[in-house]
Amino acid sequence: MLLGKTPWYPGYNEYKNRFIQDAVKDQVIHDAFLSGERLPENYGIGLDERVVEYPWLFSRLPSTAERILDAGAVLNQGWILDLPQIIQKDVVIYTLAPECFSRISDRVSYVYGDLRRSILRDDAVSAVVCLSTLEHIGMDNTSHY
Image (cartoon, rainbow, N blue to C red; front, top):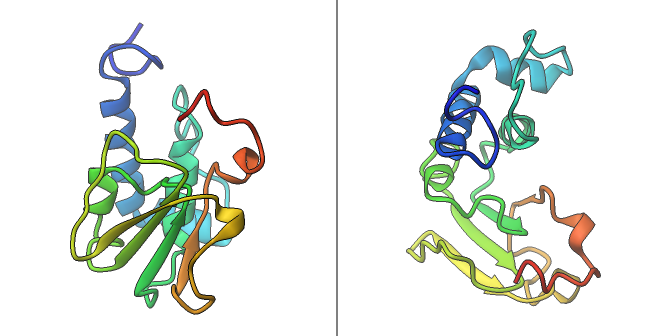
């Protein structure tokens, strides 16, 4: 077993997060996601789906988006909110309930509630991020919250 490379073992999340940070900054990876080309051989082997989801998201997030709605709190991690693609943008994190991590600031705000009954105006945001969220809508999520 390689320390940091096995899920649920010490160091895994740190290793995975570093991998994602590097992938998000890598122009070859960015271009592959943008064009639909194959990813490099053995890309992300042994890591979970986030190593695909985040780089894919950032390859498609419009640089012109000034206010982002994060539907489901996938961006609600300090190292993600500090990425160059996010750090200068306003982010509205819309999720069912408060999470362990929160960064309330002049550019990050939180709305707690059901996405199906959003309180946001139609023109309140310029982009919507929604990863690993739709499959939870309408389900009993009490085990998560």
